[in-house]
Length: 240
Ligand code: CAA
Image (cartoon, rainbow, N blue to C red; front, side, top):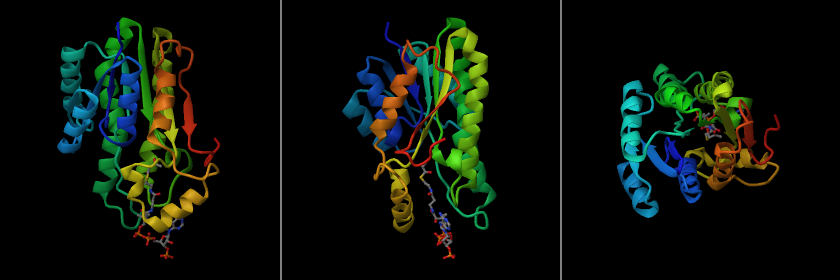
């Protein structure tokens, strides 16, 4: 029987590429989104992938969202925690709100979503959780104390949860993307982005499909011995 996957933030950017790659691999995919109804509708019409709207920073919405996915597609075998936001500002200018929003969505969302699928995965003896971290959670980034803290937290969360799932057939891994050609990176001031790209040995931004390739590798049925790992996909920008 086809596996069932949920991809958070799965209708745009890296999440869109992940949703499509999983579908092309024969997996039944539910793409979660939170804000942009028009983009979600267009994505669903183009790909045939059903979309589900909820806010990953809200614990109860995650539980009811997973219940809705389960009712429509079946129990969730694969969770890709991809949803993430930025509220970049230097420490001097960052408000508490910008800290809370990023921590609640990027890191809190991983907890809320994993909590909603975890017991079922353990009971069925199979699960794949992939958390999308970031090069900036590994190396830090000027103007991102919130984002770097959240993404760094994702890497710790991954290693801790992996230990709890290991004996039960549930793997938990992270991918740490570098700078990928998405809307999020397009919002970086051009003069700053130019300097960042100049430091990428491969000489260009990454493509969302290059992150999706890593996700496919980690969620495969025969990837059961890979757990607690972080796969860096960053064009050689940070070798860690
Ligand atoms: N290193 C050192 N100094 C830097 C710097 C850097 N990387 N970036 C900016 N500065 C300096 C500037 O030169 C400037 O110095 P002076 O005052 O001496 O001229 C000072 O910091 C203020 O810079 P700005 O004028 O840019 O200040 P700002 O308040 O308008 O903006 C900022 C600051 C929000 C950090 C802005 O520079 C910015 O958006 N930077 C990009 C941050 C970034 O890379 N975000 C990644 C988003 S993509 C992502 O997160 C995906 C992923 O996982 C990889």
